[in-house]
Length: 227
Image (tube, rainbow, N blue to C red; front, side, top):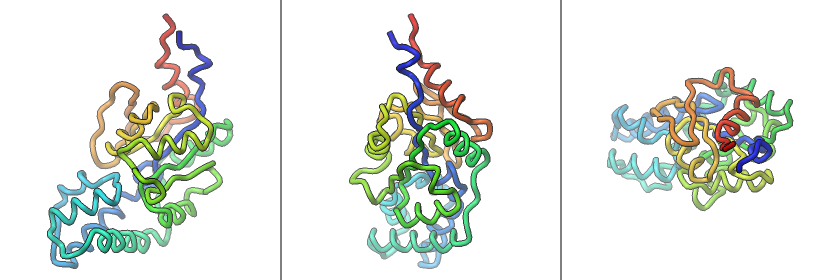
């Protein structure tokens, strides 16, 4: 029988772009303007396909649909460079995000930042979010397989000494939701661009406003089988 103690929340593993900070517009601007400048514009319908990364998948798709005369490495570096320029003056924090981070810290629940973005971008965004809120951060260029594979979330849970089944992953994109599910975590999805459906071990909310430690603990308790 599953017990309440076995469902105590041990850690919260949180995506960055579109989840904690409102950067998806910046990513799309970087991608679409670069290709337009090269004379290979893409339609807005591609945005929902590329949201959530990882960069390797985004670049491969953009090159395929645009026909731009660049290598994947060249386009990837160019997109990252443009993105860093765009966020240079700071990034807007998503509603409810800072309050959640403050509450997790106050309640002593460890949090990890788990992103498909590269390290230099995470470090830039942390200037806005506050690096002190996170016990550990995972960047997309620091793991062999990033989202939608479970590896980044499994690594974060292990580094925090947590059982994935007692972690909640917070994500905004389908790619990240798949990664959290595959890692065996409960997922709280707050969609930013692409739609996400609720399902087993996956809860969907429209915003992080009102999300706190107690609510996240409740997600795990709600899975209890007390028969």
